[in-house]
Length: 232
Image 1 (tube, rainbow, N blue to C red):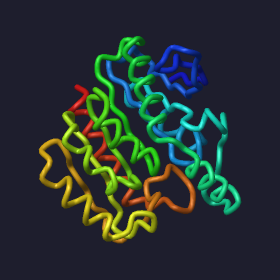
Image 2: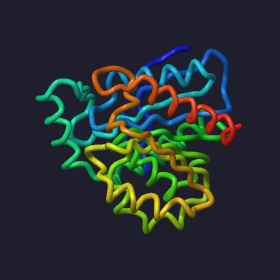
Image 3: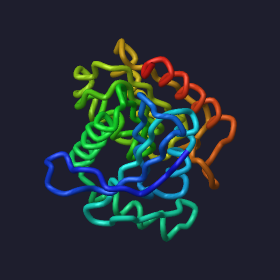
Image 4: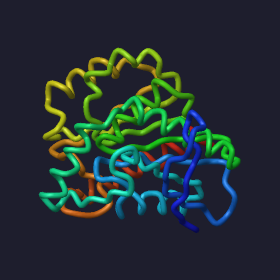
């Protein structure tokens, strides 16, 4: 596995955007886009890319905050950095984020990837949902995605498999929002929802205080099986 920071062409072709790329030891026809949380392409997100590369996928994490906070890396266990991250979330335009993910899809295809999946966390989980609805991604997974309950009107456009991991005690996605997500998406033939009883937002973080080991292992095993099936 080899990892590096690189720049990929923006969707409009005018300039580039930064990303972290982890390449498997052998050439791969499968690729994964790891969509960061509100904490930037930090150590935990890079580790997720490295883990996918170890599984044989070409993995990329685009710097979704590059427009106003390029290169930022924050630690959610440090209160001041958590608040900084919420500030970035408040000024972030998710529509721009989907364009950046579309740019990553095109770049991965140009690198030889036949099929591309996306997995996102928190804000990235919302973007994974939007990516499933707005792009030709082959499969998407969202962990504790925020604000999905407000975007269910886009679900009719989801044509490829989507999996969402929902912790039932997510302090950022309340029970009413979870109920709306289930009502809106349970009937959808392309969508699979998994609830994690008693777990909170961030339970599958690579490291830190938020991680729940059993929950993370279960969700990640489901994600690996999902991509193994749909990116084959």
